[in-house]
Amino acid sequence: MLHYLHCLHFGSFLYISVPVFSEKVYCRYYNCLREEISNSSFQSIFFPMNVIRCPRRIGVKYMSISFDSEEIPQEPIPLVYRVFEAPIHEISVCVGPIYGSESKWLEVAEFIEHYKLIGVRYFYFTVLNMNEYSRKIIDEYLRTGEIKLTVIQSEYKFHLLQINENQRSKHHSKWVINVDIDERLFILNDKIKSVGSVLSGYNDTVAEVGLAIRRIQKTEKLPEKYESDEQIISEMEFLKYNVSSPVTWGAYKTIYRPEKIAAMYYHWAYQKYPGTVAEYVKSEVALFRHYRTTEKNILGSGWLTDPNYKNFSIVPEETKFAEKLKENVLKKIEYVYDQRVLYCEEIAEIPYEEYKEFGHDIFNCTFRNETGNLRNGIPQIQRVFSSHLGCLQNYLSTRKVNCFKTSTSLILISHFCLFIAAMYYHWAYQRYPGSVAEYVKSEVQVRPLLSELLRTFELTVFSSASEKTQQFQKIFNRHTMFHNHSDSMSFFISRHYRTTEKNILGSGWLTDPNYKNFSIVQEETKFAEKLKENVLKKIKYVYDQRVLYCEEIAEIPYEEYKEFGHDIFNCTFRNETASNKNVD
Image 1: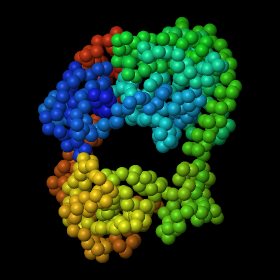
Image 2 (image 1 turned 60 degrees about the horizontal axis):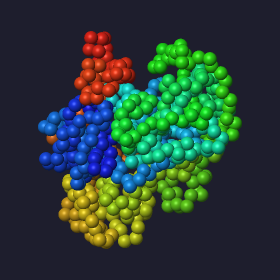
Image 3 (image 1 turned 45 degrees about the horizontal axis):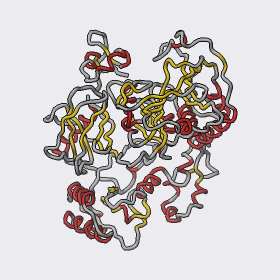
Image 4 (image 1 turned 120 degrees about the vertical axis):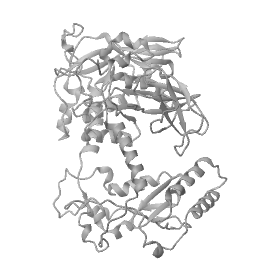
């Protein structure tokens, strides 16, 4: 099954990242309504491995690919803007895929805070699987805008898929540090304060800079959950582990310039563009520490028997760096995981008195005289609003005139985001002066209305805000007939499949007098068939996976990969025993 991850908008080309191998592929182009642009497909190839280059076309907002020009392509994905005059980030980190059952929350926080201390400000993460608890720290860094996250749902996984996603950093970051989550760059020269200073002496012909490594024995698993500050200090890898191998160049890693690299191996570029060179940093200046597990029977285990890694010694602690790292990690972990209940008395202090009329029960709060677990509350970021209300307020901050939202209660309200000041669960309870609410009868077809609105505001340039408002009103009137509130209340436009389970939020609605006289609703046969078709297609795309056969790799157009051996792929030869449904 074809799974593609990114569509990036660079210069004269669009780049699509796809974890699959083939000599030939077709670029497919779509407009803002996800409608394919006629006669626009373009034949291209994969290079390197999982990247396709497609020419830019006017009016394209989404893209897909197919292996045949007549084949029905997979669902299109949006373009990511990358047409910058200069990279917006000086130095970023591209992090190897995160996978496995071990909790990563502390490792992620320590990793990011470590690199921030040496001058890195942006991170590219790839996640194959991660438990819910660890995902919270990733979500926090997403919230602060410090990371770009790619979640891979693929029928096979291998490191080179992520490595060749260096395309996503092209024109976005000038330099990219290529490391795994257990690898940390250390600057050993006291006169050099940041990785930027290390790189500042290289001219424009340098495509990558190599650094030696030390392997540090990581002898225990990471903690499952946050318990206390003392636990964090005792479990941080930088503070806990210091048994190190000698410095080696056997598996060195690089910091590279994305626009000068054609194809990457795990540790370095194996194809650079003509006219570029590689340079190497002295190990006395900077190197990587690799906190590698000593656990047996996992990927990469057994490295302690490698003759390159012997004569272990204790590496001294960098005291000043350690103190600052500890401070920053504790601050971030406490913010995300050290939670408490929201007391209802605190809500009275908020500046929005209007909320109080709805009653305290819409908040996730507890009165101080009620029993509550101080460690089982809502995150600090949500101490004022419940998560639902906070989400709605964040949505309104978009402030785009081509932004629409539907919210349903007994009626459907389609509101023009620019005019909304504050939202309740189902409707706006504060609109800006001069704006009104209108109501659509249930028999009105909403999709054609929204389609025309989206198409108009995507493609039309207006001279003023009033002209935009007039155009919105004109389109809306053409698709609907406005009614007053009382006329509309008798029509139901949404189906709310609400659980009848007891003892959960919202349970007991069956006792509400507004919900009685139940009857069987007629099935929308045509809609049901189309819905069934689309759901099956999506579910199979994500979950109906098979193994990758090693024989398939031989068909890829990049012979260079074969020299590394098929074992770098998670593949199975056809004559080996494998379950077609059991792919890690």
